Image (tube, rainbow, N blue to C red; front, side, top):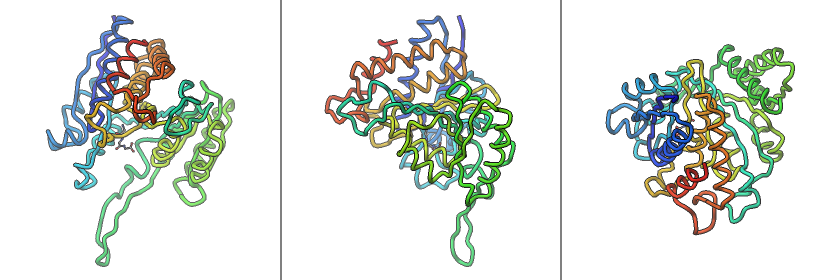
Length: 356
Ligand code: GGG
């Protein structure tokens, strides 16, 4: 029997509902494959602020650092919007990414076959969409210093700094080239090199790094063009590597090609071997506690944990196949159907468990 300890950080809004769904699926996998998953829960984000006065309490740091992998739900919500930037729920998530040096955020964007041409759906799903966004996660505007507000000549000014070291660009580029090796062998590096100095260093460094990967085709594109091409030619991409903020925006845009943000998982990886796995979506406070959230992104994130963190590839594939099966069988949460017959979070989860 393999024993793995998983830190569970449900967070805010729909976070607790979707992480519960992922745990249920992992427990079934544990029974099927004779693995013991030990779940240790910790507070993060707004709920941690409310209980402990800190978006990333010490106990959560400890649980996470002692785990084999971290499953996170979502953080944030309007009740904490009044807080100053450095005390907001999002600081919990940024703090844990920084603490574990989780610099590589893998965001696969794939249209489920079962949803293509299925009706009624809320957005047009594009057949053949299958690419991976590799988002740099511990640098750029999110973390650059100085980051502050100040009053100059009687007027308030706010500063965020977009800074990248060559070493930070090199290591994320390497992740992208490695990812492309097990895909179609194409990397598109996205930047704003016509305007930003950090992007010029980004472009030079990625180009240099490509010399070590002669089997991979590298192209560069400006982020504004990339945003257009995602809509104009969404099937042309394989691996997209980009800096933190561009990656955040492009992956939310890309989610619409698959039908819903509620379908997209992510894995945040670093050098420590402890990865963090979370749905790309946020806390969706409007539907929190209503049993309406789509649990598939969180369940697919658990599958990414099995694949990338725990070396349980067969188990991960079993979950991915189960997700296809429930969609083929017509199960739809409210985000992926116009019909009034949408299933609840718990019904969708039970269907996945049965399909395993
Ligand atoms: N599950 C993702 C989540 O909770 N996102 C909210 C958030 O604060 N994200 C910051 C970011 O990744 O840009």
